[in-house]
Image (tube, rainbow, N blue to C red):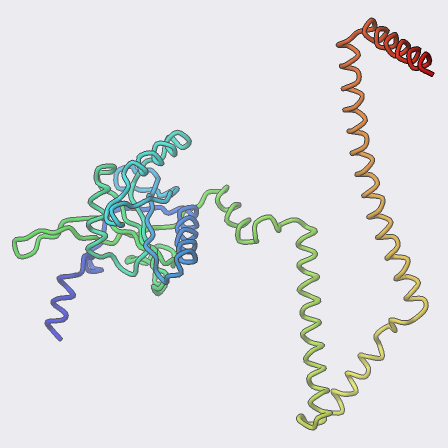
Length: 330
C-alpha cells in the first residue's frame, strides 16, 4: 500500500492543497458559458464521455491580479500532440483587433485532474505568455469550491505552473489558485436573459407559458381522478364515498358544452378570430399589391423619361403605319 502511495505521489503534477498560489483571479460568466458549450458540443459530436477540449483564455493581468474575460477554441496538429500555433496566432490577432485590451493569459481544458500531458501542453504556451494559467473544467468533480473557500461552487479549477525541487531534482508542477466569479451589469443582464430561455422574455410568451403550465397541471390532476374512479370500479381501490361525492359535485358544476348559449358564444368568438385573421391576410396582400404598383409606375416613368415625347410619337406613327398595311392586305 505504501508503494502505491509513493507511485501516486510521484505521478501527481499538482502540489498538495496546503500550497496555494498568490494569484487573485476574477472569472467572468462568458468564459464559463463558452467552455461549457465547447465541452457539451464535442461530447455530442464525438459521442464520448470526456472528449479532449482545448481553448485559449483572454483577459487582463496587472501584477498578481488576473481577470479572465473571454475564450476561443484551439486546434491541434501532429495527432493531437502539438498546438496549431498559426491558428492560435491568427485568432489571437483577430480578437486583438476587436478587443485591444485583452491579452492571451492562458488556456483551458476538460479533465478530472491535471496530468503530465497537461504539463507538456502548458510548455507550448510560454511563448505567448510568461506565466500562462490553466483553467480546468471538472464535470465529475464534487462542488466544494476552491482551496480557500472564497470562490463559487463551480466545477472549475485554476492552476499556475511552478517548479518543485525535491531530492536535488526539479520538475514542473501545478499549484491551485483561488478564483472569484465577477460580473458586470451587462453580464448580469445577459446571464439572466440566457437563464430565462433567450428570447422568451416577452410578456405574451410568458403569459402563454403560464397558461400552458396551468393546463398541464389540470390535465395531470384529471388523470389522477380518472385513475382513481377506474380503480374503484375494478375493485382495485377502496371506495371512499366522500371522494366520490366531491368528484360528482365537481362534474355537476362544469358548464355543459352542448348548451345552446355556450355553442352560440363559441361560434361567435371563433368567427371573430377567423375574420381577424382574414383581415390581416387582406391587409398584407394589399400592401404587396401597392408595392407592385409603385414599382410598375416607377419603371414606366423611367422608360418615358428615357425615350422622351418624340420617342412616344414615333412609336405611335409606327403603330399607325402597321395598321394601314394590315388594312391594305384585307
